Image (cartoon, one colour):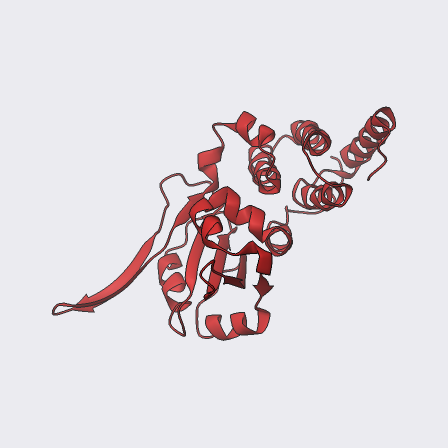
Length: 239
């Protein structure tokens, strides 16, 4: 049996890196109505210290890529975006309660991306109350499985996050087929050159793909040789 580079794919870290670098693309891809309301000339700010205060006391899952950002609205106002990416790949009973707990300290807009493989799990609200009094939170949910039926559209999409979604879906789909995963990894990397991306974006997205689509050592070596040959043919030695 071929030696593996790692026992399991690391989803958490690449999602955090992708969110930090491509927040604008993330919102444009998954939440276009939010993207349209923001003043991107002012950029955005990751709130690491504030995030620790927001989640203090909340029950955090084993594998999550949670990040808190400060963004600015077109009317000049300020808004906090809490982005929760559930990457543990399985049902979690208290997911909605955890989303509620994150919003008890101050106004935070919560967004959830579910990367698991359970089609019917779509938690989108949590509440409690009695005698006519009720406290509740609802939040928009993105399910990556919904994109699995139209991979061609993802491959044509110029948004960098389409690449991240493809890599995640293909990692799940090829869990027991390393040869097929190698073929998809090479196909996705070639797709980076066909998109309208800068050299730096190609390198950054390649790093994310390489992080997610883990291959056994022998197939990884063959994959690297394929990439080197492809770059020689294209005369674009970016990687």
